[in-house]
Image (cartoon, rainbow, N blue to C red; front, side):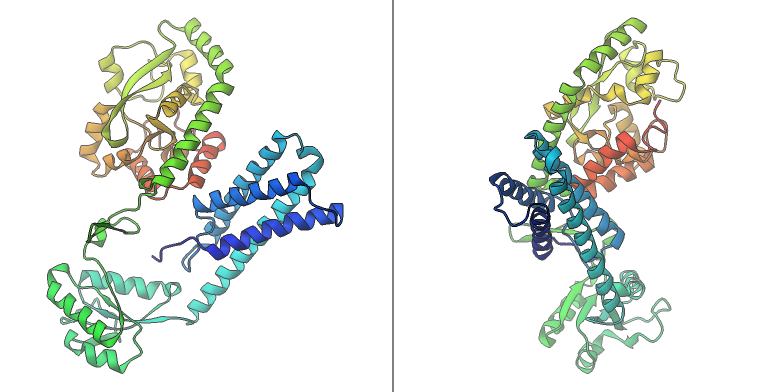
Length: 454
């Protein structure tokens, strides 16, 4: 897969479109009059917010293998966040009502132009590459399992810009495509000098280190770009991450966006602001629910329980009590099922609407949890699941969340743990601020969120 990278050109284009749209609409409604100080301040806010959005999301990240619908969706989400930020900022100063046209129209026009140029560029780029423009003719060295994987990828993905020139392998076998086998590896220099080869891909087992080094040296002598397919690609889930330990290169087997400090700071800042807002705004509602819990069953209002969080560290989670008071051994080791007799009348209501989870915003505020992340589990079940599912504890690479990608897809309650883990790892490897916002939206309005809540 070709790695996406943020494009400065796209960022600048979007910014120019935003500024031109705001200026154009301003002139259309007000004529050629000087722009006010407040309007200039708003433009500075727009530029700053767009920089923050572009820096923390994939809004301006495009490559030849980008999916058109995904790119347009990312752009829509980015502009939605920008629009909400601008509207809130203007409304805070009490000026949104009389100026709504001067704000909403430029945002809408900018969105349409940005999505339009992305759509046009991607369609054209994919068409030209598919038709053979800027194709790389690739000579593949190797004939085993790794080579077969590489060959199939090249032949089935013309849009990536690679054309298979031929294959050199010491042992011919039927899995090699007909018409592409050029002979043994000792013909490398002859083939390299005879044909238009832009790149060599070495797909030999790592145990053949000597042969790999020989091919690399020959590529250097012939001035041909060379790449190596790692023999352990089955361990790499999506995109490999290259790092270093001094002068020693390190290859990570999965991407972890939250391993970057800037992403953790962004997520933590949002967690603090969001959890504070929820706790303050919903405090009267907490009092009503607390009163109902007290009136309908004996026991405390809040339920506390040890859970396993990030880096396998235990912490105490808070919930509104939705079950009858039980012995700690029972509450820590018994799985909740549909029509569970331990659930109280008011408990069934608050569990269905996820209201019992609201005190966990205090866990978020204190730093034990995040608003979005894999749901934390009891230690008894962590030990049980890690033996049944090999990748289960990968979930603990990030902070646990009040809601998560698994929950908004319906994998909660007494459902498949494998599917839940699959969703959690997908979230860890593909995190972005936009993904968090999407999960929060689906938690509130998605159809699947409450499907297995009981």
